[in-house]
Length: 199
Ligand SMILES: Cc1cc2nc3c(=O)[nH]c(=O)nc-3n(C[C@H](O)[C@H](O)[C@H](O)COP(=O)(O)O)c2cc1C
Image: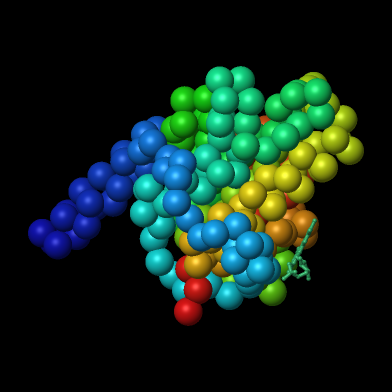
């Protein structure tokens, strides 16, 4: 009885923790593997081992992917600097929006949304999956897909530099993800990219 009560309190605590925004530490803007070694190691990986990603690594990853590296411009280019792309982060227990300007994660929804991320040929054990979302009020879907490619390559290079695994995932379930991410009719998911630990 006592044990049941304790586990109820703990799960409630976990739920409350989940439902809050997460402040990210400042991203490291120096270091990493030398560029030529990094590009030589860029590849797709589909098998991950279960391990939580430290907040500092997540902070670095999101900044590299699509953070601000100048007051009004980002690490990934966009046509006419439209900045139509935003990132969402899917964890095992919920989804957060990456607010790049403030460099923090804003809580979106609690739950397991991994079924919408793509085909089962890729392991579900990634520490996080990044979902790229275009605002089609800012650009065309063609431009947004190109912009997603730059973000994807930033993630690939980060993973290669940090000995992490990643793969671009075009096989996501568009409507399922749009619903989970609470997107409006002008927003569209363009690409999914898990990042996880290798054996
Ligand atoms: C736009 C795009 C979508 C992709 N979608 C998937 C996917 O849904 N599933 C998958 O296993 N790999 C996917 N890939 C990864 C490719 O299969 C992979 O890049 C290709 O086989 C070359 O391997 P490499 O990345 O190791 O060089 C995708 C890659 C790109 C660029």
